[in-house]
Image 1 (tube, rainbow, N blue to C red):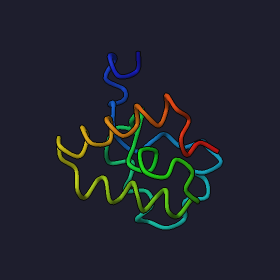
Image 2 (spheres, rainbow, N blue to C red):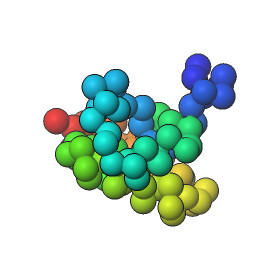
Image 3 (tube, rainbow, N blue to C red):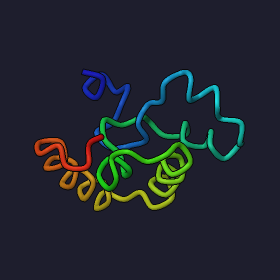
Image 4 (cartoon, rainbow, N blue to C red):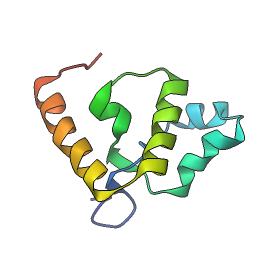
Amino acid sequence: WNVLKGEMSLVGPRPLPVRDVEKMDVRWHKRRFAVKPGITCLWQAISREPNFDEWIKSDMEYIDRWSLKLDIMILLRTIPSVLTGTGAH
């Protein structure tokens, strides 16, 4: 519903819990809020369970490299990961 309402996109930085947003004391961490949050993202398609800094760096990489091709790649890699539970912790 959030995607249909325009509040989220299919691919983009995942929304963070408030406790994690409060940890963000580095200015470049907050750059991730410049784009709409997504249902899936680069780290979810690749590692599924990064530490906080890897998560944020992955979001920055997504923002810097964004393309339709990247979104399609992320969606195609996320679907089997979710269905099979591969990489889930």
